Length: 348
Image (cartoon, rainbow, N blue to C red):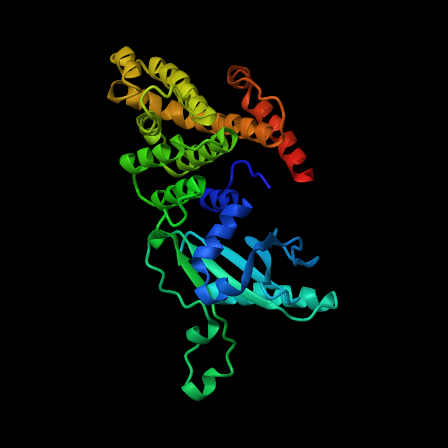
């Protein structure tokens, strides 16, 4: 499902990344215990079709859920549960128990035996994870009472410690993981961002590359302050091979152009005329930064919707609406177009 204006850009980008099956398989292969990987048919890993929700559940669905088979062909189903966290959740043990119980209850209602559930908690925060993932480790009880407390093994994956180059044949996944790693920093790390664009520069799948670029740019623009936008455009240009002639991602170009337009107008209205021409020539630098910053903030929302519309049109194999045509429309009109595309995507 493609989501517009996510309340949590980290969760949104995580889902956009690992909804892609090869990316999910690569993560599971690298993070599951080696002895378990040796027994699994990795190609059998598929997204689960069930939501495991009842009529009284208010939640939309579990973060990401997959099924798998063993190599020996047994009928045992193993559910691989990925629960993404961008902060240390003190209720994680109870939350995981609830998820597992929900799955087992659903299977029981449908006449299926209990199955193995392997929970993976993918952590993206900056604070060191110090929360027990098992209820048994949270309960303060004597050793002879510990056996009465539910226990469950959980695999904790700290993205900050994951080597992004663990699968060099998947440059898109490496770029996305690098983006998630730098997104928790207080300021946009310029050289690390350049490295992401350099990584995708040689990737030959142009359509997928454009989708990845748009996803990463929208994500970083959602996370970092608007004043970092001109650094992001410079990082993209610096990450391109000399003479490549590659255009900026659609959403970044839209954000940049809209920010310039709105920023210059705002600056003029406020009487900030000095340095405008020089500031534009230098890529919106100090000369008009105050005037542009507010305009960029105003342009972010419209630019994101434009980028989202064009990305969705690619995903649905529809004609791509030219960017100037989209930018000439009001924000309400753009949101209406985005809603129609999202509805079409849900039906696929």
